[in-house]
Length: 122
Image (cartoon, rainbow, N blue to C red):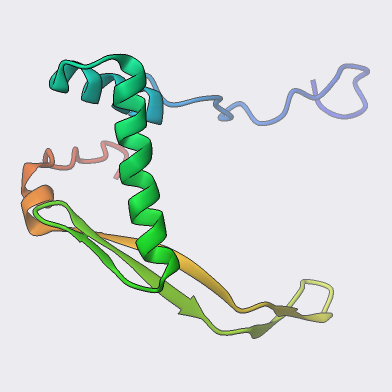
């Protein structure tokens, strides 16, 4: 099934699409529904509450300030300066200056996380 056999090459066997079966992810819609259930309000009110919190966090970050949520963590802006880079072909190009948001989890949040599962392949 490789090149030159007349068949289309399917790509690497290890390629996966989507999260692994044991992974559980929480998206904005699920968070909104959880907030609505806990507060005992409609789904649209739960979604509006989540939107309000996210807008508030984004608004404070836009002013250049850090956002600290007690027992959860801190959102902090990281400013990266412009820097030169070299491609494989030897050409030099510039990576522009940029601002990123970093999150550092609070010790209280880290304490609630499950212990890491050892990798059997290691």
